[in-house]
Amino acid sequence: MVVSQEFVDIGWAIKGGLPYQPWAAAITKKRTAENRIDDPNSRCLPTGIVRMHTAPLYRKVVQTPKLLVILNERNVWYRQIFIDGRALERDPQPSWNGYSTAKWDGDALVVRSNGFRDGLWLDSNGSPMTDAATITERFRRPDYGTLEITLTVDDPKAYTRPWTTTMKQVMATDSELLDYVCVENERSVRHFKQ
Image 1 (spheres, rainbow, N blue to C red):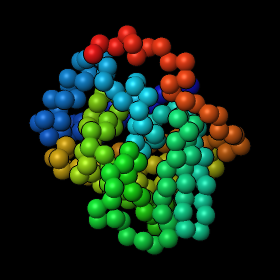
Image 2 (image 1 turned 180 degrees about the vertical axis):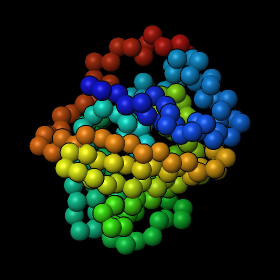
Image 3 (image 1 turned 135 degrees about the vertical axis):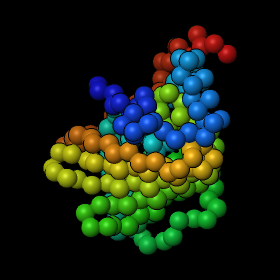
Image 4 (image 1 turned 90 degrees about the horizontal axis):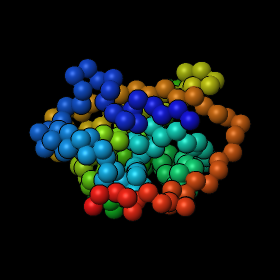
């Protein structure tokens, strides 16, 4: 199992690092110094769409004419992306995965998402994301075995400007998902400092 650089630090490839607002820089520094004991991922909570791109678990994409569904092994998680031409919701019900719409731009599927819960972590360093965020993802397959995801986060509450990073992932096209439930046989949380 290979963990990507982005799993630890989503902004590792961005020159100068992430453009944090002062409060976001302080909380990320604190979370990193505390060895990430409050990480929602460590507590088996949903992680949101950004962290799902960096986790070393399989995903499966199912496409219908009006809907794209991404299934994930972790906690038998799913994500809906509407590809029927609808606009992004102005005020969706906040959720872990947000509300997503998409359209094709040449060979790239461009997905825009909003409506996130406040307080999500973008990486295990604790880089925050707020309910003001809009995320744009560009999914491309530059070759048979590669998925390229260009991710832009526009969150004016947490960052001084939008920022973009690109992740390249190996595709496993002939595999099946296995159930992975984080809390199954979990025995570590009782040792966390409260």
